[in-house]
Image (cartoon, rainbow, N blue to C red; front, side, top):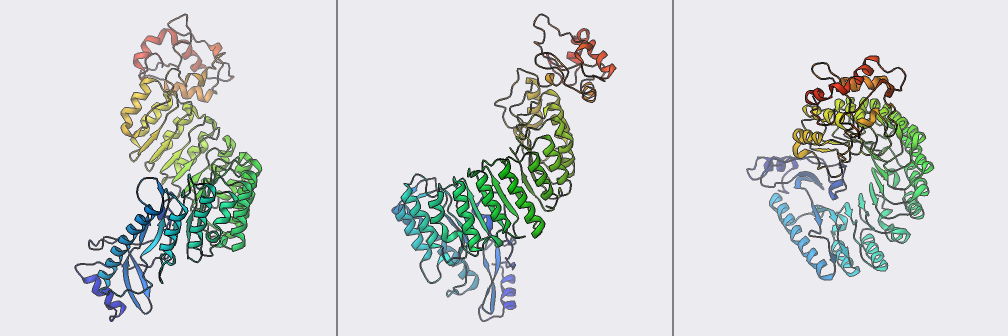
Length: 576
């Protein structure tokens, strides 16, 4: 084959009954939303051929061009365990077998046993989920660095997350240093160091790979990085000049506080338009630090013109002022696909600002999380405005808020068929919200997960939801079926004072109007322990301007109680 021209060789392979050649150029990079080792696998086309049963990429060797199967991902399979010398040798031997098979595949394709050194057999190495002894780490390092064309020179993605658990500090640092030195002259573009208790000493041990000029993606999640450690990471990245190449930066659960926010902001300020994937969450940052991060991101987007696709800033204390800064940058993120702002103290006003910005960048949005932001039913219209526009949205989360049935009802009516997951647990939602979600089943034809736990659904509500959604509905473990959340929409728990505006009273009237025009109201069966019925009067309606016809209808509830129980479209038993 090497005596043929490039075109002739490609034509020969393509016309062969045993092989199918689909040449592409692998220059782009995929950024999946999870943290899998395949995060930086080359973009390639799927080959319909059966002989190779693999993806194809184009390799140019000197003046000859031919196509080769996709390189290997080498990993340590099996359950979590401590890898000692013996286990390391077993792992290395299994890798040798895989490499020999891949080499045979190349030889079968080219018909030449003398393969050029430039052929890449392996691009990814995953050592995650094992705990290595220092000697085991040295054996693996010697294997990947041995030979004139070592694996280290080929590997571009290295996952050494969670590799020192249960090891003494001195041994853990030795392991990190060994792996880092093995790749000090490599061309790594992706490094995952997550889930290693590192601290300042661990950061120093990994300096060799953290400062690689080819680095494009860095994950340091759940490392327990303090403010000082974050400053050291920032210094290494800034001094090595790698920030300009960064496409992905993930820092999660590092408890670095406001000082860590300042260090991260320094990194962001030196990044370029290449940066599209950012995770900076779970840092225990206060208002000042969170605001610094938002301002740095805004400056980067305005200055460099980068278009963020993945943004996770969860568990930061932005508040309304921080929400203003976030809104200013989000309005420019036209390619935004993933946005996680759970537990950010945004409240209704902050969500209003964020939602207004998302109306300018909703077309690509696939994941949206507003959970844990102290949202009330007043935020419903702002959320709905985004949901109605975001026709590609696959996941929506708004758990642990106080949206009530009114908010849930509005959201349910705005959902699109594209939705795959819906999470509305812990929202003080009752019968009205449940009925709206049941009705939404007609639209949610692609839904795979529905989570509604920790609400206040009556037993009949739960049954109706289970009948509508079946296995899609996540099991109710903490639902409170003794109380009716919708009762408190109108009456306070102590003094029965009105909590609804006249417009919301009209909403309740609409929801509980039966086929013959009767009107009922959600009430607690134990509202009056001295009677089998509950008495309502216009005195209960204290809010000025309540609709007169609604008040009159409520006053007739006692004598209509028996009939309404059977006629209610919601089919409640002691509750209507």
